[in-house]
Amino acid sequence: MSRIKFSAGFTFVEIAVIAPIAIVLVATFIGVAINLTSEILVSKAKNDLTYDIFNAQSMISEDIKQSTGFLAVNSIALSADGSGNGNYEGLNNTGVASNTDTSVFNSINSPSGTGNKIVLNVNASTGNPVSQTSELAYISGAPNACGTSQTANTPQNYNVVYFIKDNTLYRRIIFNTNYASTTCGAKASATTAAPFQRPTCAETYTVSFCKTNDTALISNLSSISLDIDYYSDGYTETADSSATSTTLATRSQALANDNSVNVTISANRMVAGRSITISGTMRTDRN
Image 1 (cartoon, helix red, strand yellow):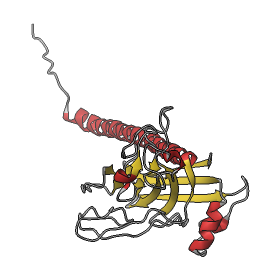
Image 2 (cartoon, rainbow, N blue to C red):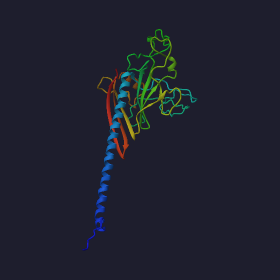
Image 3 (cartoon, rainbow, N blue to C red):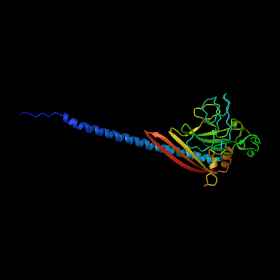
């Protein structure tokens, strides 16, 4: 009795029929996987960018609330003599010890420009401003010595600047070059002491005056804009406060009367070959 033998596997005809179908199925699966991965990356990037904008606006809001006023230009003088002396905090600071840039920060509103934006005057403190034990810091000899009647002295102040450079939103603190030796410490102290706040400079800058680098609030962007509108009575915008067509004197006078600001940040980032743009608007009053 003979037996019929069957061989395992596919015939050429079967393979010719199945192979294209398998290729289509695999390609479809890969396409779905790539698309799903792309959607996850984009979704995460949107959440990250939204958080960055919210964080930046929160920091701006806190600085505005603690400030004594809006400035048309930084009130702390910028100096650099090219030989390693100075405060190295000009707008175009390059991170070189012999940098001589003293370009000022104007609060002119040019959202698509390089970003001379928000300039604030803030009183320095002996400790963290949110701490109940923190006190105002005063200037020694203006007119009294530290530890006597220094609370009648002029408060030690600094400037906070928010500006855009190289598609990054930065926060910079500007101090006088001799701030550490001219600031009165706690009210009961008879000596001078540096305030809690510290001057900052451009990233990678290492000179001794700069205690730390500028804070990069939003970075790794394709583009970013910062739109600022100032208000003096809560609802009427004061166009003279930041208009490019007005003089420095006119802007200074207008900003002196402003008590609130509307800040809009719009940032764009490329993720997985896709362009995502997130915008956020915040309104803050000075205390």
